[in-house]
Image (cartoon, rainbow, N blue to C red; front, side, top):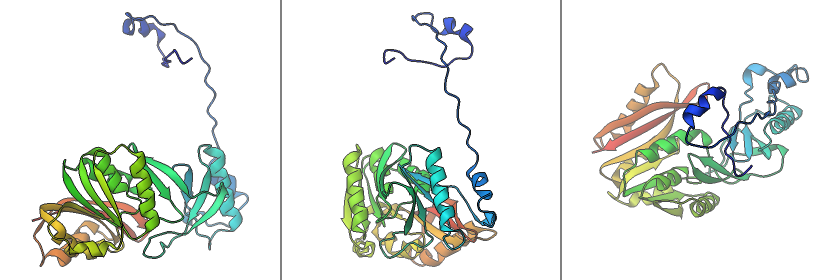
Amino acid sequence: MKDYVFFPITEPSLIPNLLNDLSYQLQQLDFPQRVEYEPIADCLQDDFPNVNWKEISLKFDQLGEIAVVKLDSTSVPDSFRQRVGELILSRYPRLKTVLNKRDIIEGTERVYPTEHLAGEKIWGSWHQEYGVFIFVDLKRAYFNPRLAEEHHRVAMSGIQGEKILDLFTGVGPFALHCAKRFSCNVTAIDINPFAIKALQKSIARNKLQGDIHPIIGDSQRILRLRNYFDRIIINLPQKSINFLPYATKLLKKGGIVTFYQFISKSMNPIEDIRKLVKTKLGKVNSYKELYIKVGREISPSKLQMNIDLQID
């Protein structure tokens, strides 16, 4: 069948009008019926009647061939978590393993502990976002697939020839997206050598328009530079805002700082983050707000804010 192109149609009578200058033939093919699986929760409720379902989410992130769930090991038994892993693998044959993400990201290298639930014992895989290949090493380096839209947004707002500083780069998703989309020069720094090693693998695989310079080191040390970058990205949401006064000294006039910050839920989180920014920058720099958005929900009491500021 390699010499044919098949187009599914519902109205054969319209074909002559569309393909009157081409030779073609109509064929009837029977497609396999789609399997409708019972929801995973329904499969588990009879066997685990004492589980508090209101506090459990069976949603998962897919990173290449790996599925990552988030189940509290103190509130659900081992057998429950393992069964969830087995059911996910049975429904998604392209996946090879299911891991459980624990709550706390550990150490300065930002590695969250994971528990193997089902399938092969692998922690490394190629993840794809908007045509960008990213090598992830979940056992030894941080990566968050839920920032895919932000990776893409920042790259699409880039300008040819920009010099970009990507602090706390992790495995380099921001750097890779930017260098994939336009000609730029990205300095990507992280203290975790395994994260930088993963980034180097991704640089080798992707056809990049820009250049990425991976650096193993403490992001705070590079803050000694002055007026050098067109954009700085700070993705350390627990305390990104504390780096703002230092980061602005590295920006050229009119440069942009993109950062992500956790904030407590409130009636008006946008105004809350604006007050925090003013506290940090009000006496240091004048700035203009280019972009501000309530991002993902981190917990029932915490949100992530996504912000772009232009520094005068």
